[in-house]
Length: 129
Picture 1: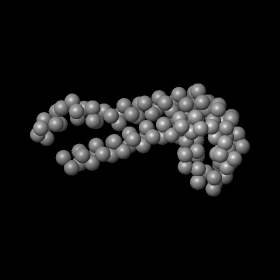
Picture 2: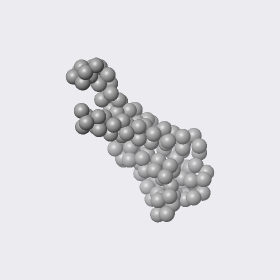
Picture 3: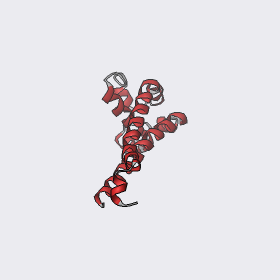
Picture 4: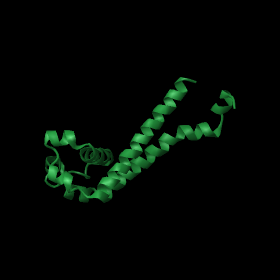
């Protein structure tokens, strides 16, 4: 297959649409987490300073804020070193965080990482074309 045929093929369309579809799935899943599991996350992190300060308004500030809150909690749980150092996260809360919620946060973070890597790979392929 020549390069011009490739750029007109369906494979290219799906290759370029992949990161967009992954982003849609990641945003949808993050909104699902914010609407159905945010209460359980707040309960699991009840001794943490971040939840103490922002807990009453979590999930009540709109669509974009809900996505940012889930991202913040995922960052606190999956990469806890900075949050522990700043005092936002209680070490006991981190230790006792429910595994099913941690797994869900890993899924949404993994979707975002895969989408970004895929998009970067496509950018490099287009640049070297």
